[in-house]
Length: 113
Image (cartoon, rainbow, N blue to C red; front, top):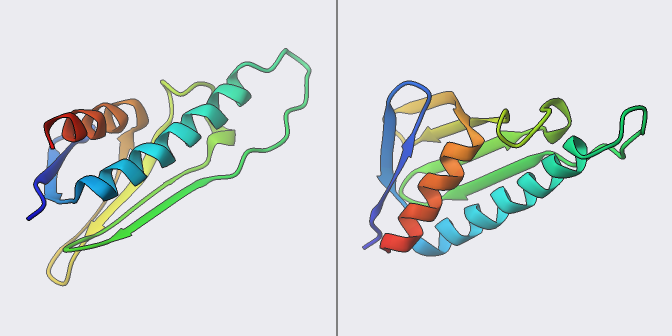
């Protein structure tokens, strides 16, 4: 049985069943996104940076979880937000969440799992 992952949102939080394996996949996707954001943030003024690919994470388990972020529109990883969708056959939540908060929540979940 997988333990619940609790994500703290800008207003409120959501907890849902999530496996440690899925948590590690999400953590890797977030790490890659943060690296893309750092490339964009560390460019010299007037330097053109190659556009970075968007993060499109999807997981299907007891609930469907999707996160999307375009790293090319955020000045730093600390400013970045992700579009988060969590749904099952009874409910659907779509909201914006702070990237750094989600990264911290996933790390804390994996430490406890």
